[in-house]
Image (cartoon, rainbow, N blue to C red):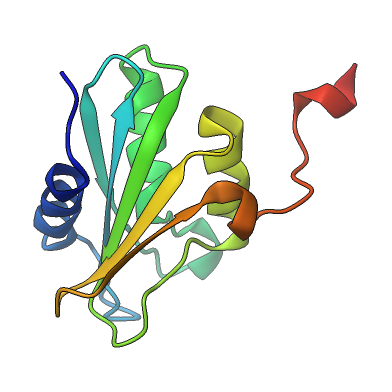
Length: 132
C-alpha cells in the first residue's frame, strides 16, 4: 500500500504526543514508510544522562529494522516549533544508511510543511561504498 505524505505526517504527529522529554520539553515524532508500504513510528526518548537520549527518527527506523525491514522510502518528522525541525547529524546518517536520497517531510503543529531530499540534508554522505 502506498501512503501519502499526509499519512506519514499524521502518524508522526500522533506518536509525538507519547514522547518522553522531561528534560528538554521538546517532543518530536517521526514516521517512516518501508519499501513495501508499512509505516513505523518513533518518538524521542530522553535520559537524565543526555548522551543516552534517542531521537524520534532513529527510534522509527530501528523499529522498522527490528520488524525485518532494511530499506525505507520516506520519513516525516513533526515537532512543536515555529521553524521546521530537521533531523540531527546522527539521524541524517542513519536515514541515509536505510533510505539514501529519500524525501524528508518536516512539519510543525501549525500546519507548516516542507519536503526536501536527503541529499540536501547530507551532501557527500558517507556510506558503505567507502568500506569496500
